[in-house]
Image (tube, rainbow, N blue to C red; front, side, top):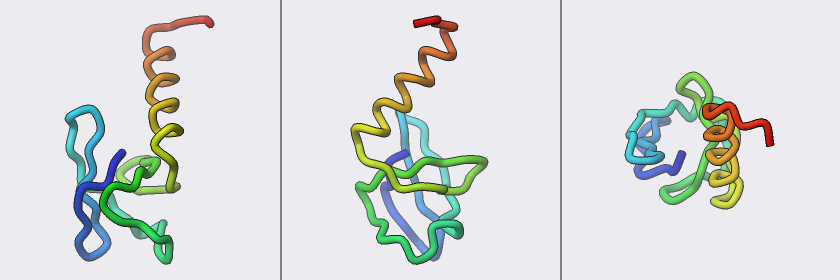
Length: 70
């Protein structure tokens, strides 16, 4: 997800038009800011990733959801 804003350990993130509040506790000490992409699991940011990696992750997610066997 892409970080839109940050406030007191919570990031407002968006992906594909969906907005979520994401807890940054597990990323404490990481250099994060608006415009950065993070991998999110159960409401927590768990890893900073690049834009290309974020795009690839969504493409893989879409393939799995369709049941593609490529």
